[in-house]
Image (cartoon, rainbow, N blue to C red; front, side):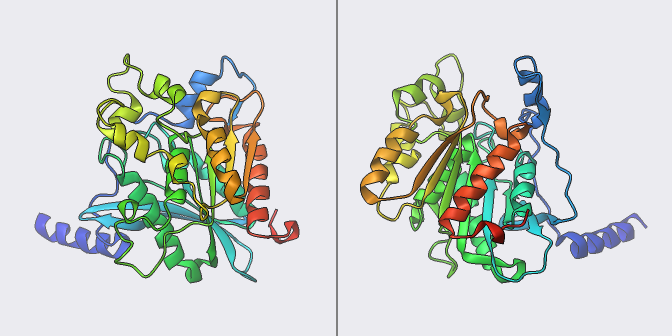
Length: 334
């Protein structure tokens, strides 16, 4: 009887979940959530509240979609669609959560993804392999796979395949930026020559993420000898002196060229988290690459997880994307 019940259960799971045997790797050290961050910030910012994840009637939520598999490992995303009937294709945005490359959850970006979906964007929040599961550059491979998935399913979900942006916060901002500036580089995209679908993006939003690991300011924090290991050192598998090539290779600033997508640097009032963006902009200027720097005043790192900063962040992101994708404000759902 027990064997029969197992067979029935497997059949049901196959129908409902496609036999996704592994969808996440549990890690008790993964504590980067809005709730834990709130506990750290509330004393200095007593007026803040955790941004709500309620899905309004104007947005359709589709959760737990597998976008890539590695053997039995399935990586998933949550999709947010404007509910209004599709009269024209919508731009898409793939969100990459932060957490020091080794923690965090895709739901951390749910409020911002919902906010942009309300403005007429198709948005996806993704899970990717954290450093405890797979070291650099696995996360970049995953984000490019998510972008390819969204473009592959563009017709199904009403996405304009020529208007896809990648966005991320903190470590996710660095990952998103590196993903975007390495369009077409096979080292960061193992599927490049196996797929006819591009993983290129047309815009980047780096929210308080590093642009240069090799700068003195970045190494002062990310290579702090008191941390054993540091977050970046854990991701790279070694400190700066041990893995210098990787620290350089993972720095978005060193890939600036004439084809670099437009970039929004959305930064907090804590300058060490966005180290390197000014130098990167100076490299972009000779190529005429569009950029924008917007600072959320008097804000902590991880400001996008909380009100009153979430809505201004959504407004800035929407205005930047509308400008890059030449969308009139009236075209954006509100």
